[in-house]
Structure formats: structure tokens, C-alpha cells
Image (cartoon, rainbow, N blue to C red):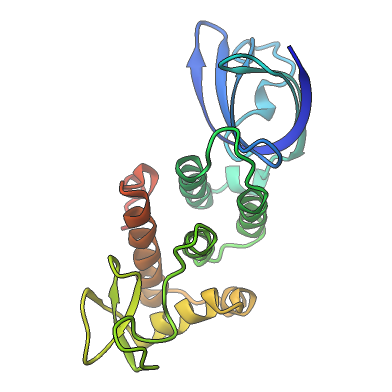
Length: 239
């Protein structure tokens, strides 16, 4: 079996046998990797605590036919701030689930990996409720399904834009309104996030109804693209 190094973020884990776990990791160079971490459920495991969901780690793998084997794990960032805050941990899990659904096994997607790492760092260092919806919107753009938020989907008019058509992929004007009504504040946030002004949008610390509205719109857009509901979002009542 061939040895290889990579780094990645643990998306999820599940039990295998009495002492092992299967670890699903979004890596920088190898896409989504499923690997066995042997003995990590034992109290004397060398690196069990380093392979928890949302951990950012350097890894050494043996390449297997179906599942690789983790032989070394070194923590880059454990994101302790997330683990000490249940709300932020729940938001992180939503991003992990989205990446798990989007990433392809053995297909490198360095941009998705880097976006996830940056989003986790941002979430760990602050409590902006825009981090997750902004991540969802940016991921849609990365996938080639960037929502149209600058002009009406139907006629191309600049606005005012008053509704969100999830199936069509963006905003509509008053004449061609369809889908869900949106507030001017939500339109402004959508345009900031997708228009290269994410930093300023996060810095403004928008909260309350507008953030909840953007969260709902972004979640529904991503779920429409995935053709499935995000279990973590439903469990957290973030809809």
C-alpha cells in the first residue's frame, strides 16, 4: 500500500467494530477521503481526540482498496472556541454537512477546502450569524450556481427587487415577482455577500430578522441545489 500526506477537515465519523472509527475528511489534495482510524475509541489512543468533526489536521494515510488507513494525525487547529459554544458548534456542523454532500471522493477541490477552513476560523473568532449563510451562498457560486441578486431574473431590471425565486436562482422585481417575498435589508446583504463585500457585511454585525431571513434564503437555495434537506439545519431549528 502507498503512503501519502495531506491535510484536511474532519466532516464526520462513525463507529467501526469495537475500537475503530471511519473518518470522513475533506482534504486539500485528494477531495473527500474515507479512512479507518484504528483503535481511536480506546482510552489510550494516540490520536483519537484529534479526529473529531471540525478538527483541522495534518494526516498520513496508507492507501487502501476501499478505505484508506490513518496512521498519523497532527492537529493544525482544534477550533476549541467552537466546541465550547453549542450554538457556534451547531453552525459549524451545518457547514460540514454541506461539504460532505458537495465534495466528491478522490476529486481534489482545494477551493472548497480553503473556503471551509476560512469559514471555521471566522466562526471560531466571532459570533456573526452571517457566516453560515454566506458560506452557503459562496459554495453555490463555487459550484456554478451563483444566485442572481443584482438584477431581476426575468427582465434584468435593477429593481427594486422584492422576491426570491429559489427554483429560478435569484431575485425578481415587483412586476415579475415570484417565490418568497424579501426585505430590502436582505437584498442588501445578499448583494454584499455575493458582490465581494463579505468582510464589510460581517463587520456590520447585522442581527435579528434580516439575518434570519438571509439564513433561510441561503439554506433553501443550497438545499434546492443538493435536492435534499440538511439534517443539521432541521435539527437546530434554523429554518
